[in-house]
Length: 330
Image (cartoon, rainbow, N blue to C red; front, side, top):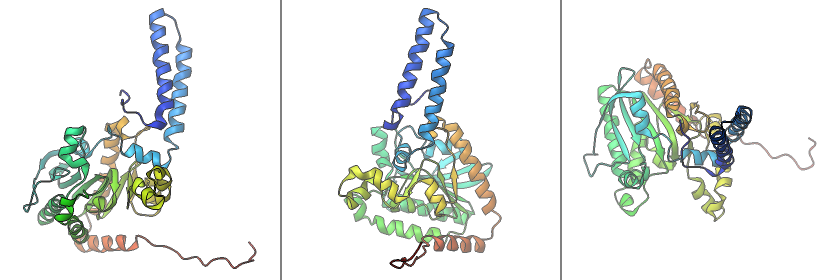
């Protein structure tokens, strides 16, 4: 696959090496010179540099990968994993929010209900999708579809990818916080299996509004946080330039979230991110989703509700440690 044109700051050394490789290859063709040894040396250096960069990403760099404009979005995964996706529209109260989509589909031959946050690829589509930031009617549409899934016994699969719910005046006027709060309550009591997948950004209550599920999965380079790093930096340090520092403090990356048991499984990504090999990322998601649904499906309704209650009651555990006495010996 050709390397995406969009380049992150930390990828520039790699791009310079790739330019050298291209130039050397072109020189070899034009002058009919065997430069295989030199080409092999640069290729080896590229491979080493790739691993040095992508296997040692900082939390802030992973946030940047999660926001990559070429990264697969919900509809890309739905197309790769499911058959006969039939989108259902509207909340039956106000409008059809295009930032939050949903409908029925078949996953491995089984009927499921899909609910997903969807971003746009270009400016026009981003305006239509509201940059992936749902409004109250989006969350009410999601709730309507969850209740429909409950009525027909369909597992619910949600795809989370949003910087947050839309914070505009019109969104507040239509009670976005109430819409999200109702979803939190109703998802906690949903009588069918549910799985959430964080595919990119998982920002604040906007993500949580479709995230109270039996299992929460996250891609390796996605993030899940109460606030964006920029927002946190603006509040704590009065300067959004401290976003890298905030990303480190928030512990918002997949490895930290798994350690704290906020998520249940981390889905590995191809080297360099899901956008470098969307098919491989989709296959990894398919395996994880299939495994989780196989574990949840045999459970009775009572077991689902009890386990879900226990899961969310356990979140946020902490341990108090008494301060060491002054002068105490180590």
